Amino acid sequence: MRSRRRRSRPHPRAPCLDRWRGRGTELAADARARQDYQDDVASGAIPPLPVWAGEGVDLITDLPTAADLVATLAAQAEDILAEDILARAGRRPV
Image 1 (cartoon, one colour):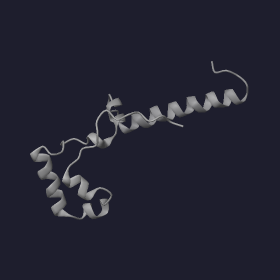
Image 2: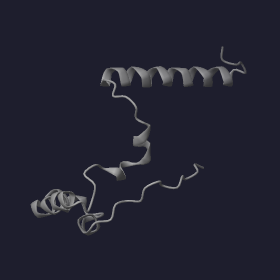
Image 3: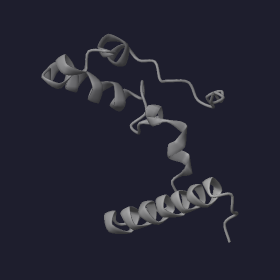
C-alpha cells in the first residue's frame, strides 16, 4: 500500500473551477466557460499554471526527446526484468 503524502499546496478554489468540477465534457463545448476561466486567471483568482497537475511535476528536471525517453524507459524495464529473472533463479544481479 502506498503512503499518501500531505499536499504542500491545496487545490485552487475558484468559482469557475468549482462550477465545472467533474463536468469536463460539458466544459469542453462551452465557450462561456472558457471565457470565465480566462477572466479568473486575469483577475488572479486562479494561477495561470496548473498547480493541481500533481506534486510529481516538481520532480521533472529535464525535457528529453520522445526517442530518448522511450530508450530510457526500455533500458530501465530491461534492467528490472533481468533482476527479476536472476532473483527467480536464485542468483544475485552482477
